[in-house]
Image (cartoon, rainbow, N blue to C red; front, side):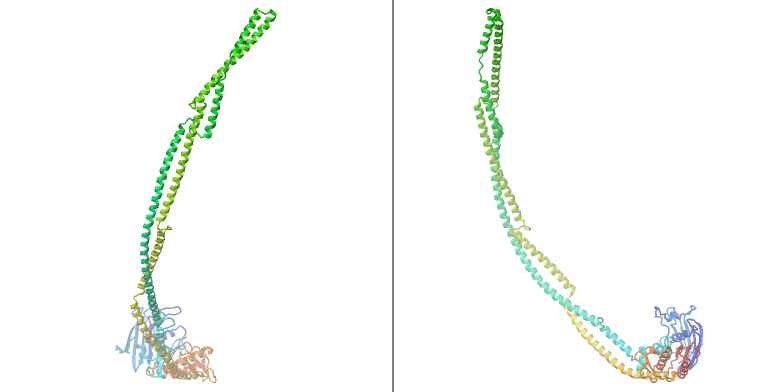
Length: 638
C-alpha cells in the first residue's frame, strides 16, 4: 500500500493537502506546523476516530484534540494505491458526537465503490495490520518510540515462530484464562469462594435448623410437663383455698361468738355501773370521792356537836337581880338612912352595883342569843343531811359509803368487761387479719399462697417456654425448608465439584500455556532481537552488536566486546530511541505482511540522534523504503 495524497480538515489543518510518493518521503517542517497532526490524520483515515474515548486528567481524546480549529466538521480524503489499484477513501462527519463516522471508498476517478471495504475494516484491509499492531509497529508517534506489546501483535509474532495461526496470543489467552481463573477464585473472591460461602451458610442453616428443631422439641416437652404441673397445682390451689376459707370462717365464727358474750357482759356491767352512779349521785353526798366527802362529814359532825354544846349553855339571871336589889337598897339607904357624910359613898356603891348588874344582865342576854344562834346553825347543818342529830349524819355517811362501794365495784366490773371486750375485739382483728392473710393467695404465707406462687412461677416459665418456642419456630421458618436447603446443598456441592474441576483444569492450562509461551519466547525473541541488532549495528557502525527482547517487549542492548548487556536506564536518549527504532523496524519486518507493504510513519523519530547516526539512520530508512513506503516527519534537516 502506498499513500499518494492527503486532504484534511483536521485540527489545525484547514483544507490542507499533502502529496506523497513511493519510497522514502521526508517532510521537514518547524515545530507547530502540523507534522503530528498529519500523522494522526493518516491513522484516523485508516482506522477512524474512536468516539467512545472520554477526556481524563492529562489525556485528551482525538475527537477533541483534533477537532478543526475553525469549528468546521472533521473530515478528510486519502488517495492511495493498493493491490495495483488506485483507491480514494473519504471520511466525513454527520453527527458531532461521531466524528469521521461516515465512510466511503471508491476507485479513484470513478464513483465505483470498493467491495468489502468499510469504515470498520479499511485500515486492516489496506495495511494488513490491525489498529493496535499498526500503532506498535509501523506508526511511530512523537515521544512514543518506546515499544509496548499487544495481544494482536503477539499473535502476529507467534504466527511467525509457530503455527502461522494469527488467532493465538499468549497474553490474550493467559489474560482470558486468568480472568476465568479469577472469576472462579481470587483470594476470597470469585465464584468458588462465593459458592463455598453459600455452602457454608447453607450447612450452618441446616445445622441451626437441626439444633433449633431439637431445642424446640425439648422445650415443647418441657412446656407440656409445665402445663401438666400447672393443672395439678391449680387443682391443689383450688382445694387448699376451700379448706383455708372453711377454717377461716370457723375461726371468725368462734371469735364473733366470744365477742357477743363479752359485749353482753360489758353492757350489763355498764348498766349496773350507771345504776350505781345514779344512786350515788342521788345520795346526799353526791358522787364525790370518799377522800373528799369523809373529811367534810367529820367536820360537819364535829361542828354540829360544837353547836349543840353551845346551844345547851344555861344562863342564870339571879345574880343580876340580886345586884339590882342590893344597888337599890344602898341607894335608898344613902338617901334615907345614911348620914350625909356617907350618903355619897352609898350612892356611888349603889351606882356601881347597878352598872355591874347591867353588865351581867347584858352578858346574860348575849349568852341566850348565842345559844339560840348555835341551835339554829346546828339545825341548818343537820338539815343538809336531812337528819335530826349527829347519828343521822353518821348513818347518812355510812349509806353513802355503801353506795360508793357498790358503784366502785360496778365500775371496776364495767372496766374489766370493757378490757375483756377490747381484748376479744383485738383478738378478732388479729383473727380477721390472719384470716385475710390466710385468704391472701398471692402474697401470704399459707400453703395455698405458696402453691399459688409456685403455680405462678411455673406459668411464667411456661410463658417463657412458649415465647422461646415461637421464636425458634419463627427462626425455623426464616431459615427455610430443610428439604429444600438439603437439595440446594447437594446441587451446590455438585456445582462446586464441577467448578473446582474447572478451576484445576484452568490452572493447569495456565501453567501449560506458560511453559508453551516460554518455549515460543525462546524462539521469537532471538529472531526479533537478531534483526533489531542488525538494524542498530548498521546505524551505529557496529558499536552495538545485540539486542535482547523480553516477552513484554522491553529490551536491553550490548556493546561489541561487552559481556553483560546494558539496561535502558544506562543508555543516552539518542541510543535509547535508536534501539527502540531498531526493534520497531524488526517488528515491521517480521509482523507486517509483505504483500500489503504497510507504510512506515515516523514522527520526529530521529530528533535525539546526532548527525552521524542520523545519516546512518536515513541510509537504513532508504533501504527499507525499497520494500515499503516510509513517511518521515522531522523538524531538522536530514
